[in-house]
Amino acid sequence: MLALAGVGLALGGCDILGTSSSDSIQVQLNEWAIIADPAVTTAGTNTFEVFNNGKEPHSFAVLLPPVEDGERYQIVGELGEIEPDGSATLTVTLEEATVYELASLRVEISGGDLRSDYDEGMRLDYEVE
Image (cartoon, rainbow, N blue to C red):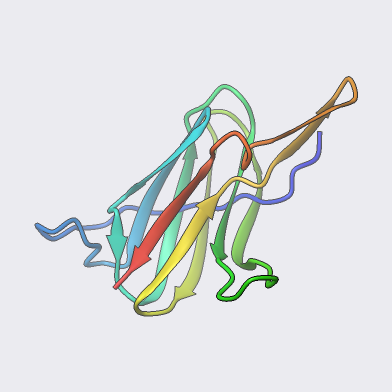
């Protein structure tokens, strides 16, 4: 088993539009989904507290998608493997008017088969106003 990334978020107050007012976000990892609350945040320093509610270890990363074809994703921040019922916290700086991707980059090799959390759907577009 190889863990490539993992990240966390902390939930603070939210305004009526579902935008973070305290620059903290709570993230839940499950098989095979990522849920973030609030769904939108503001630019600047943001703290992510990630909780693994799944039955398997997962990782978490904040990614900046490529702007042009042929470019690679940039890893803005990442945490290592988070065990089931575990949590981790990550603080990163996010830019205004940008859509990031929250993802688990964990890869598992078992019996010669390769399985990626990302390929299983553990990714979420995340908007910054």
